[in-house]
Length: 453
Image (cartoon, rainbow, N blue to C red):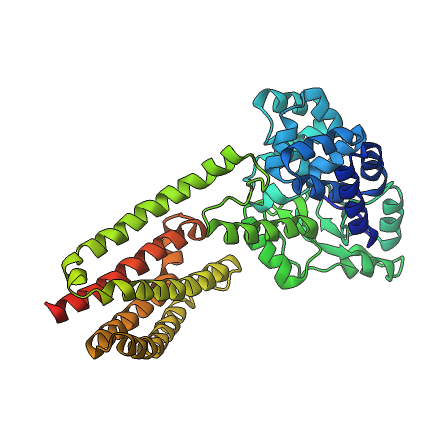
């Protein structure tokens, strides 16, 4: 979905609207909503508002704006508004939707309404939507738009320009025309910038580019985003397994993928869903978070059980109870640093089988160096604090062991989880925390038991 970039006044208008809402000036709110703000601004405002205020804003918005706003709004909040609409309402609201946006919206509708909306379309539009829907949502096929301008290689620049003038407007983000054969097989692209400066008699074949590889329709959206970033693409052709052109992907959709992936990586580490509504009701929010709190509680019991194994030693040397959280905490931080680095590298395609061995060796050495450094620091602090060189030596040894294991675990764990088809961003943090706690307690209390028994 594309939209004119908002002017600098947009932020001031949003502030004015917030002030009008606070004062109860609903007529002013309605005017600002319907006359001054773009659909993207309104969507942002709805996402930033508590449920009651959100409903009020939606009711004050003109009917003809609703469809445009729905195209920009987050899935959870969009589903909230779609629940109140019947099939006819959806048909009217989505009349001007681009194919990829419409496909996303249809997947949130009940089956009966979904089918009714599809049946209301003409055959051509229905085929385009169904083609996008036939591909997974997180693939190039699910991301693409079928609204493409194509040309043949044997026609002249003059013919292409006359053909373009027959269109009322070109699809958004049209920086190139796509050159195809009579069987719609992809051949190359014709950049608009090259078209405009070429001689009218030149053929498309003479001026087109054939060095741009098309994107396979099954490619994951994350990998599509990496290609757009690497090659500074504005749009890219999408082909099926036979090399037939099926659509194109534009940078505005890729920006959404990048943002969603970034949100996923950050929020998943806290056991949260990037699609969760920030202003969801209290009960729903508590329920969503309770699952991961429960999982963390189980892992905490595991760590506590390890501590319980050394109860006799702790009773004998009380200083151990004071110092043991330091070992576990330092291991957790060291592991999280490596874990975050590798997850990000995997997301951007920079970490793979070719360089994983080097990365593991590097993290091992880093873990040992940091382990030695902080082992000395903590040992000196423990000896000064408790006037006992033995306990300083024990915590130094445990610190070296845990920081080394933590660095290795943080590097290897995401790779293992991905191989098991488990999301590393979602499960990695919980597993790593448990591992570093267990190793930290086991090494510190185990060494203490050997020394003091």
